[in-house]
Length: 403
View 1: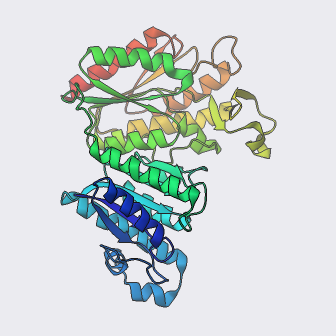
View 2: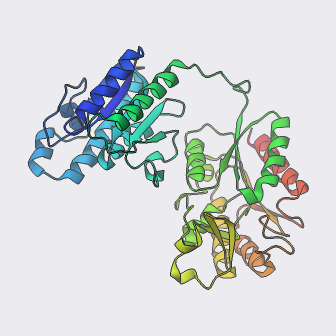
View 3: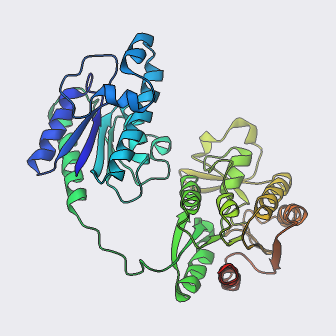
């Protein structure tokens, strides 16, 4: 087994060789993969670029003849993912480390996303101090800011690349302790700060019943990660309390999980209980990042970098219909629970987003569209312990019905 080290060896060859040597100094075997295309490699690779492009269904010669850098990077990313995934299936991959700028990050992160959770993944990138969701996706990728461009070994890059090698050596040497609950069936739950009390109490009920609960922060990538695990067949039940990512997708906030959110459990027939947590809000960053078209709306400053915008009755009606439609498509047992007194900590009596008309529009949308699924309404706030307990017990009943 070895650490697969990916870099474009025409532009980052000497830097990759430095990382390889640092890993070797720590007793870590490497497999150096060349992801370059247009220039001459500065050092020899264990997996040459010809092999990489062949794995993507093209050839190095074709890509060089076209001279299209964007196309070459896309092909290299596809080939890298294919090669690393196949090597992992053969039991040859201890971890993946990559270095690069925009092209190298695209290629290296693609290879990392082809691997399951738990395999060490470290991306040294010039882009790591910015928005990295498109690279990390729903995987456990560690992004390390290169600080300076990856161009030569100097007093800064030597420190950063040396630390990267040390971090990877530590990760592959460590043996994670097996969880005491490894044989328990898995349940997923979605949570936001404004629904924490609900999910924490529901989690306690589910754990007392013998389940291991994976809680996902509903920040877009969290919802995507949960949907991915459900689709992979690893989950026994879903407590989707916090469906706020649907609002960001509909209205244009920054925490969308994409149009396929709330579909995996329905397709897989996994028992699910769905609620409407934090659908009173759309998420933006600092106030100056809010698009001009929303300037007249009601806002709540959650903290200096998070600005919340109240959803309207019309938006809530559309969200309700979407939830009802998606949950009604379930192949397994499902239910929707509605908290009549508020859907978040700031949608409660006397709180900034308290809006009974908007809540009723949301609930009406669900009632109209949920033609094949049970809708249970409670005269409670979402963070009332009784609501949390009702949601958890409903899921337990649905999982028992499924079994």
